[in-house]
Length: 345
Image (cartoon, rainbow, N blue to C red; front, side):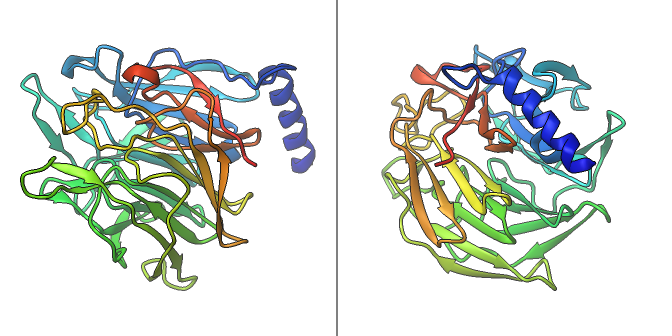
């Protein structure tokens, strides 16, 4: 019966969301970039949380939550994230029917940025409660879920700079542990995900050379196999370079059903939340979408001319209709509300 219901819902989704010419999801109620994203119910329910609006100023950072159920193809506002200020660069994931929202940074009128360790959990009853703080607060980290219980928070920028740590949140116990760090250069703004009990992470920003930009793009790619008996034990190995040049703020996300980790967009140079690189130049999004096939153990180029490319969309969500990106910065660093369906093959 459950399989039949899921099939009926999928048919309804396809009928509502897909025209004969081009796949199209409805836009979110407002344009946001650097927004945390997550999904529940097998990708039938999509969430966008916080982020910055089109003015890209400190007072344009929001704590709003937008939710869409694919069966209705309509966005609505959820309960805002608690707190007096919204955050940028936070990470979010769905597990055990809950959304776990972690970290990020707040900005002030003088342009200062403060990374926070906050954890907020959104339960199906549509209320927030405070989870246990991250041991080391980070922003612009990779997030992924294993066994619908363990949330992996990988890399990111801490108050002391980029890290290569892997922090694991147990949703059942509201507790944190430290897993095997990835052996590469500490980075933030990296991309990746978890699928088939495997982590894939790529790129990000690392400290720049003396006399040069503060941060430069890293080109390292890593694969981590999670031990089935011990979720904190990860066997890491280096991967060959992915399709296209090294980038910052790529959207990434894992798909268990596809046994792939998807990647799309990002910029060639690390940049701030306004889309300005650390050398003072505007950063433009890449049109390359690619994936790592965990079964075939190889990179795949899915598109070199992706429609409506993005940067600073904080993740790729896998839905029954395919992977999507929510919001972010589009062409000319414009903050957008659009939702784009990415190619899978």
